[in-house]
Image (cartoon, rainbow, N blue to C red):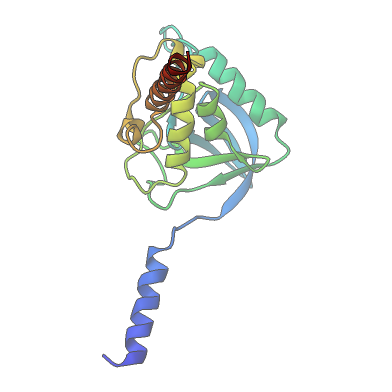
Length: 201
């Protein structure tokens, strides 16, 4: 392998390692379903879309009662979609295009902001159904989930534990440890001040 071939080989490896983002495409809202599902018009086609990476509490259906915070999550999603000037979908290159119920799987953007992030941040949904760690936006969602969890926002008033995102708990999202460290540092400072004051007396 000559020098030029080596350079080309390195460039190809670099290109392969770059994050893959699919292009967004614009859709129009047809009908809200619940906190994580909706019908859209993609041109002339009507498609049912399940939002990637999250799970919102269920609304009442098929004789079953609504889950805790299910109605609130459904209302929030519907308001966000109805009030959006532009709705865009983005397929994830690491996800299947459809689920077992033939719903399209996509990241949903309302006026340029990822709706899944808004739902998780406000406690209307949790991070779930991640089948590949390379899914787009997952770490951002996990960060927002831990913030909502420690603030007991929305569904976290009753939900007891983090699921998928627990793998990140000891890396950068463990806010309880940060709080404990802060208390220990504060207590240490108070003790030092008291010792210095006693010595002066």
